[in-house]
Image (cartoon, rainbow, N blue to C red; front, side, top):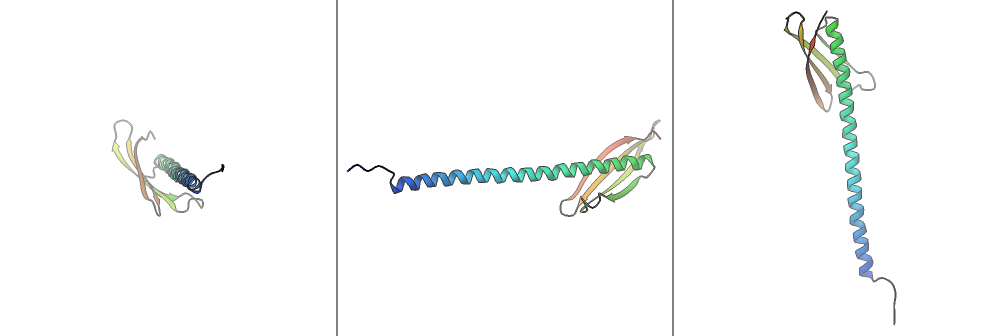
Length: 119
């Protein structure tokens, strides 16, 4: 009696291997999605920080050494503030500017930089 086909054990082993492979693939897929989401959040925060830096530089040029604001309706949960301190007056004034972007759940992100004010 010659029977062709697979035994129940062989089918169960194949299904177990397939299940483990699917688990690994789904886990790597969800890890990639989480990393992509974190990257989008970081790029968004960096862009808003650059906008706040531009506002601080404009404020310094108009002699506003401190300021604060928001980023409009689209980013209503973000706010920014900046302050400038005179560091040196050798021919051209040097200012230290501190910019802070605040998010309700992420907290504060700060950036410090120097700017010469030729005006």
